[in-house]
Amino acid sequence: MIYTGIDIVEIARIKRAVERWGDRFVQRIYSPAEIALCAGRIESLAARWAAKEAVAKLLGVGMHGPGSSAHSVAFRNIETLTDDDGRPAVTLSGAALARARELRIDSICISLSHNHGLAIAVAVASASGAARKRMPW
Image 1 (cartoon, rainbow, N blue to C red):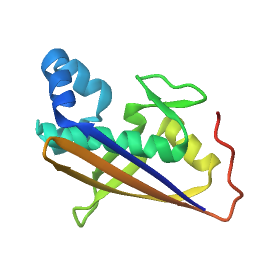
Image 2 (cartoon, rainbow, N blue to C red):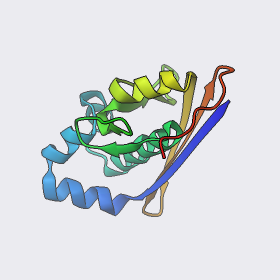
Image 3 (cartoon, helix red, strand yellow):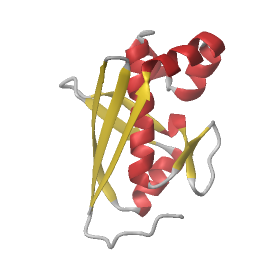
Image 4 (cartoon, rainbow, N blue to C red):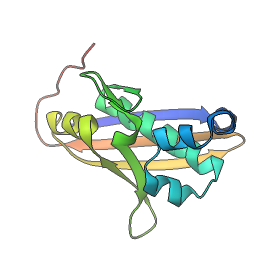
């Protein structure tokens, strides 16, 4: 089984959130490792926002703040860093990891890009031979 997710975000939207809420916003959405990797680059933060949304879509769940519910995951449950070769790599925790296990997802690959004021992420996951689970809606 293959699952996919895609998301696009206006970089200016993330910039406005950072300007308005500062560290409170950044620390609520991104892990300490993501914050360090992005080093304040708004384009990189926006691409990782899109990554979180794209992964949530392939998991068939929504996104919300720090807690979690049966049909949503916290932003920090999806982390996008880089592997040893510099490619984006996704790590799941909490409710996102539980949902991935429920879907029998073996791996998630992600691609990030930004240009002309937009950031985009595409996520693709492969799952073992399990029958597809119905989405919660």
